[in-house]
Image 1 (cartoon, rainbow, N blue to C red):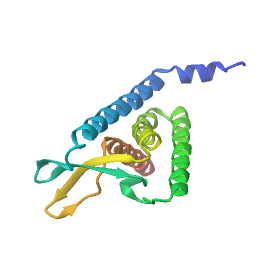
Image 2: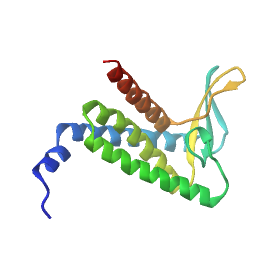
Image 3: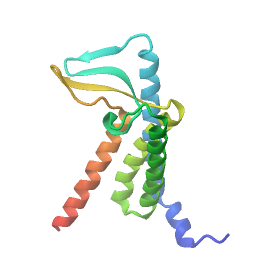
Length: 165
């Protein structure tokens, strides 16, 4: 099979190495945080950090922020398959994108891979960061969700800034 020189240059470029490093680093950071939380919260339900932050382990079978959490097996597998397709699309977009798109999409892909791993091995995603003010609690989330959100915000901001030019 003949691989074009342009393809090889893009695949092994400095930008691709940076993207891969970001993806792997986020995945590892996410795994470590979830392993620590799962092992520490096996015996207790919550860890009090301060008046605004607790660690509460919640097993999320849905998508972002617990949306579409269903007990039905078919929904879980359909959602998991759609997430897998999105991961493939993100990889393609990283390959085709400019430098900043590669960085921002790598943040998203690193987080998506972390959560997808959990869906495959635990059949749910462990969420544990509980931000709150008094009785108002934000959706419980994890480290992977933070990177996904930051990547999306940066990607949208980049596009909004380019539109203004």
